Each structure stands twice: as C-alpha cells, then as structure tokens.
Length: 266
Ligand SMILES: C[S@@+](CC[C@H](N)C(=O)[O-])C[C@H]1O[C@@H](n2cnc3c(N)ncnc32)[C@H](O)[C@@H]1O
Image (cartoon, rainbow, N blue to C red):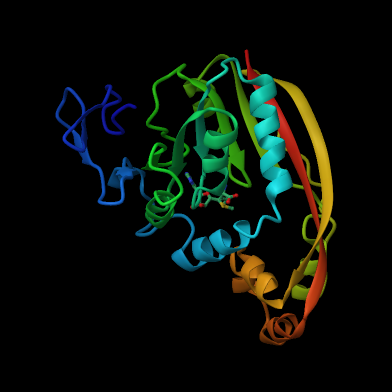
C-alpha cells in the first residue's frame, strides 16, 4: 500500500499505516483504513449513502446476482497471471463481490470505495480483506503490483488501473446492458429511452481479451423489489404516483443484462 499524500510505501505498526514521511492512517475499530485525504474528497460524504448500501446488502444476500459474481470469478481464474492473485476491487460497496473473489479465486483482496459507510459495512464480510476508503483516481496501491482490478457496476479510470496492474494483469469490468432491469424502468419512468450501451474503449495500455454479453431472468416479490429500487439511484428520481404503483406490485419478472469485459495490460 502507498501513502495517499506522498506516494511512499506504508508499513503497519500497532494498527496504523505509516509512511517514511510520518503520514499516518489508523485502522478504524471495524478494521478498515481511511486513505482518502481531504484534498481528494469533493463532498462531505462522497459515494453511496447508508440506506442504499443497506438495501444493496439485503438484495445481494438473496443471491439473485450470483450468476454475475460467478462470471467475474471465472474471468479472474481464467485470465489472471497468478494462481493466488492480488485483486483490487474498485467501488467495492458493502463487499459482496470482493468477499466472493477472496473465497472462490484464492485471492488476496483489497476493497476500495469512496464511501466510508461502505468500508465500515464491508468489514463484516471478511477480516482478511484490506478494506479502504479511497478514490478510484488515486488508488493507494503500488504501481505494477496487482494481478487483477475489478469494477462491478462501478467505474473505469484507465490510467490509474493501468498504473497499479502488473504487465499481463487484467481489468475485469461488469457494466449494465441496454435491457438491464428494463421492466423496473418501465414502472418508474413514463418513457424509457433505448440506450445502446457498450463498455467504453480500453485505450492503448490495454488489449481486450474477452467481451461477453449476458442475460438472465429473475422474479422478485414486493419486499425484494423495494430493496432493488432502494439500492439504485432511480428511487430518488421517481414521481410519487409511480412509487405507489411500484409499492402495489406483488411480483415482477426482471431481466438482468450486462457485459463482462476483460482487458489485459500490455
Ligand atoms: C453501483 S455501486 C456498486 C457497488 C458494488 N461493486 C456492487 O456491485 O455491489 C458503485 C460504488 O462505487 C462507489 N464509488 C463512487 N465513486 C467512487 C470513486 N470515485 N472511487 C471509489 N469508489 C467510488 C460508491 O460509493 C458505490 O459503493
């Protein structure tokens, strides 16, 4: 790990990470480390809010998105340059996917999220993962040290991911396709515009080694539907009468549609 202020290597002493220039970062009671200096923090509480994170945990623990998790694990196992890879999960949220990478890919994982509440909650998923509060644009990880960077419904910061990956290391990304949760969007919005989504270009530091478009259907009851809505930004944009209609929906069949892309660092 590197110091987010000066970039020097951090070493751990008595539950604090300290660099040679004496910048020091304490582990919180739960175990995470806050490596987000104020100058990299553009609002008081950046990232996802507590209610969204709690709804996401409740929803993900029901297992409907297990196929997505399995797809990413398969890509790590297939393309990572090491058998026990170092995996940096960006925008890890409350840690559902990161914990699965540790368990299923024999990985040493570092979870990165800009929301302090996400890191706090993630600590309950695994004690051996290093959970950090940090930004994707200044990842506190040494250059050329990671076997894999993952971003599940999160962000792609081309140069920074290329910096922390070793040569031959991989970036595994999950992005939503144009039909993702289309049935929910129809309930929420008067008009749903077809967006032909496709992952953005990888730049010249990467070559694409795999791109899969996936689909599956799952059915939710009313409680699960409310959780799914609450973990997305849609709930904040909805008109009251639409929200009421959704609250009256007893069951809904939904489409998951997403891309799993693997880029390899050249
Ligand atoms: C849509 S959520 C996905 C969370 C998780 N990967 C999952 O699928 O359950 C995106 C996450 O990225 C985090 N995030 C947003 N901007 C970020 C940034 N600049 N650096 C790191 N994390 C960020 C949010 O706090 C949120 O937890």
